[in-house]
Image (tube, rainbow, N blue to C red; front, side, top):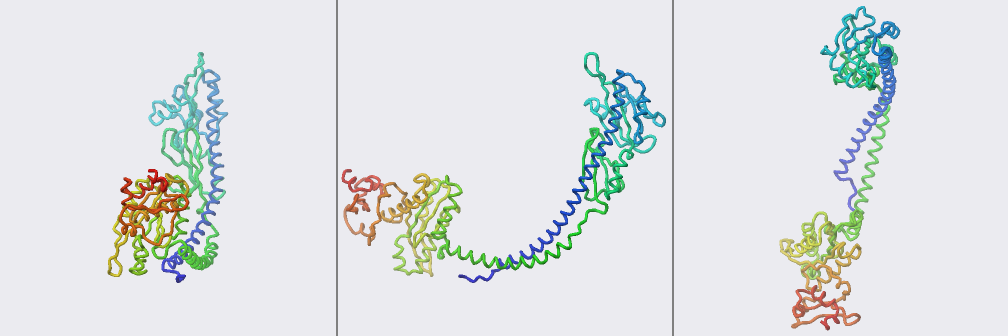
Length: 520
């Protein structure tokens, strides 16, 4: 087991944990602060909603007055009777005046004294024409303001279009019933209650239903002072959007901040020590896993690591195309015997690096034992995989070790998933059988699995078929004399005599059986 002292990166990690935990304590303090503020804001928001509804009801009262005047006009079929009596009955302290405007011309005002200038043609007035037209066109009550009143102060106009039913059942526009509301008189009581609960407030509205411009209607801090971080409640009245902003006097505050900071200091120290111990344990575990799943010499996956990685990859997508490749360094024993095991190890390392360079990064590559390597080409078609394998096998496997040049060759057998089998274990066995066939065919080649290879048994021979074939003249083959008489090897003379290009084609032609050859 390697030295388990923390390396530089891990020491930096411990330092970062200390810093992060310190930041975490600060964040926790801030979060506690925010929670307290959020609770305060939620309470303020509920209050804002309640009082916004009160304000909406206040404005609805103005709307109701226009309805009462409208009813008298409709009841008299468009004639104005007892206007002053009705208006005086509906009059409130927060009302500046109640008006009637037949055909959009203000002719009746209560009280008239002080409001004489209010008798105007609304459709001829540039500041009112568009809003009045909107109200008539959409048959909706509209509000406009606040604007300065002639007699002083500010007001908001509530205009309600009146339609008289005709004999044919249709409704014809008659004029407008209008109420001029004094601000802030209408909502002094409502907003005053907010102030008594310790809140600052401001009330804004769009100037009219056809305007996006927002204007300040009332504020506890003055018209030019904005609340820093208020909560808001919106409501609709007279086609306008009203916004009530509320904030605690003096701003939002929390009493838990210092307590959280002090208690957090203990957790910083505790967490730093725990992190140090965990990193030591993790490093030990990582070293054990690495030793179990990684080949120490080449740095590739070991057999166990290869199988685990492949199983995990296939479990994610069982429908992907995979080509299994078994690769063997030809005559590796001779390399060890001639040049020594250190040189043999250098050859294995060189081959591992060549395989990494030859196959896509998505491939799974492992040294599964001795001089045997396995590659899983993921997501490539069989033709693409075959090209990659042939290029890898045909590559000049030359390397330098201790200022000496060495060369070797490799053989490969491969099989395709799911083209040849949909079973992972069979796929690996097929690739292994194909590699064995490549070895029998003379090495330094790649062979794709063929179904005829499945019955070829591996007879343990103490000599090289290639060497034997080079020393014996004429056409010959080697077969198993027992059982089903499986053909194990045929030299080039016999292969050519049968009109075949290579051993694979010869095996395919004969089915790998002596009996088939005799009847051919």
